[in-house]
Image (cartoon, rainbow, N blue to C red; front, side, top):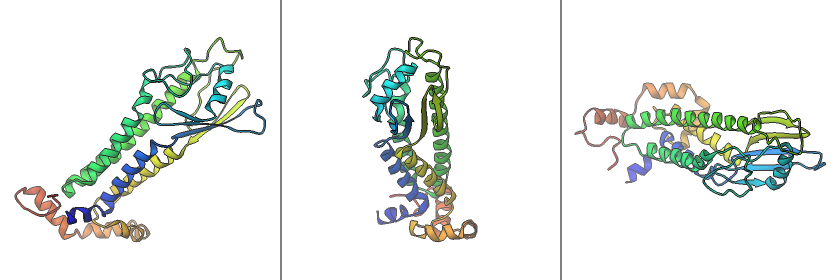
Length: 257
């Protein structure tokens, strides 16, 4: 047991665990923030906070009133009642419910990879997890942007303000509709997600090392030479792991007992 816990101090095992904690924590705070300015609120910025599940924070009630003038509505999560009023003209976004499932699934994967019984399986898991995580978030980013396009091109024709052209709010960046200006950017959960992906990338780069977390600053200063040098001189533990992978009857190695 002691040996197994010691292995978890390795960079390639500890960082996926840290990333898992960040991904779970990201569900507790806003993923995305939008600041808005409008003539109706001189000298004041309105803030909307969006979570990874159907919930809004900040000044969403005031902004919802502004949106009605332009015929723009918050999306309808369909299967649950969110904490805001849903218009019949809103687009359906039932997949918003899956946010916690995605984040929890990626977090579980990180923990699973960290406890891989052999180095060979650990390396394969780190590679698959990094590629899979990036693919999932890129796909989510693209799909959310598509939903924003739908919302901006499904303006209510019965809105008080007429003649407003369809628009596409960006997931990140500035935009304007009528006399309302907005800026969308990451919330705390978004930044936590970015850090989690960065930790997975570092763990992948350190997949051939048995260095521990306390050696990370030294390795960072020597990168990439340190990785190349240590990769050329595999540790005894790595040698045993490869032997154990080739022959299951060989004991020891990196197998968890």
